[in-house]
Length: 134
Image (cartoon, rainbow, N blue to C red; front, side, top):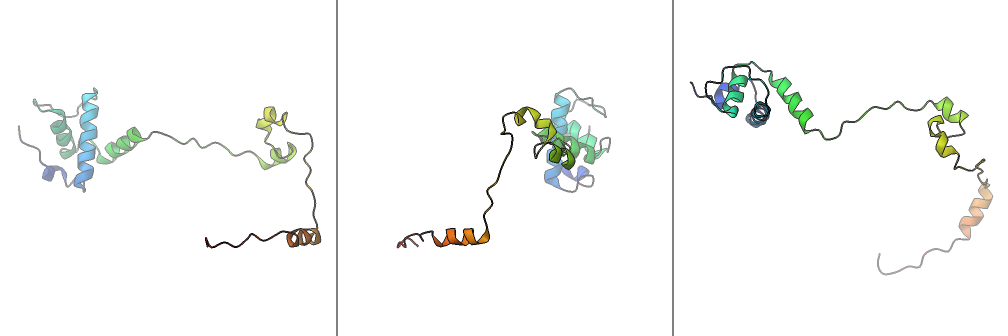
C-alpha cells in the first residue's frame, strides 16, 4: 500500500486547493455510498479519493461539475417570454394573466399635457429653501 501524496495528483489537477475540494467532495460521495473505481486496500475514503484522482479513474472535470451542482441552491428555469402580439391583443396584459385582468379597470386613460402647460406648471413650483446642510 503506497502513500498517495499531493505530488501524485498535482499533474491531474493543477491547483492544490481545487484538488483538496475535489478529493473531499469525492470522499463525501464515497461515504454516502458511491461506488469506488479502485481497490480499497483498507484505505480511508480521502485516500481512496486521492488514489482515484491520481490513477485517473475519474475525470477531474466531471468531479468539478458534480461539486458545482451539489453546491447550487437555486437553479434558474428559462421561461419563454410572452408574445408581443398577444400582449397587444390583451390590452397590455399577457393572456396568461387573464385572471388578474378582471381586477383591472375596463379602460385606462392618460391625461395629455401640452408643452406649454408643462412649462407653466414648472414655473409655478416653489424652489426648496436653502439650508446649511449642503
